[in-house]
Image (cartoon, rainbow, N blue to C red; front, side, top):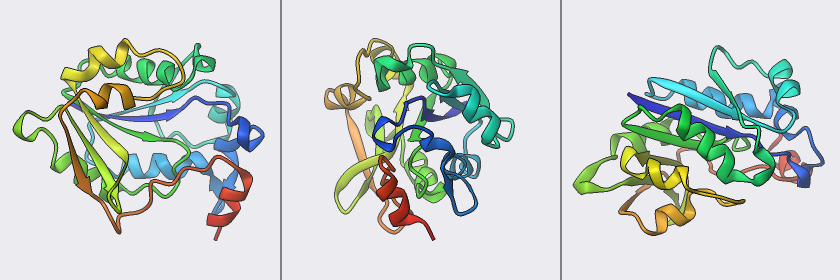
Length: 189
């Protein structure tokens, strides 16, 4: 089984709160990332919620995707990554995107999944203009290291010690995340 993991547990402090339900193109910001994951070739998708979880669940069409609540969300991204990987522990691999990346593309997800697991690589990640970004595929061999993460760090430290393949995804959406209202307004149609 290949799992999809959408991390959406943060408080969005720089945004002023309510980031994941802020409107973009007539629907909540989070729904854009969820749509990309729904269209991707994954067998099961987990959405990790934390801050404002009830408010997000009430406002966002989760379309039957599995919600995991991260009670320790205030610790930072490591907590939500642990919660998601814990829920997908039986998967052969998990492809990770962030809920505040509304321009991420299902085609980028599909491309990194198609290039995964070659020559003993433990992770496969998209790059845009030579800069690494999301989506990132974590093979099961890295799950233990991810479950040991602490603090406000993502998988960067785990990837630093792993065999990682970068896959160019130029022209397949954008990995830019929305942290501020100005950034949201810059991409609003």
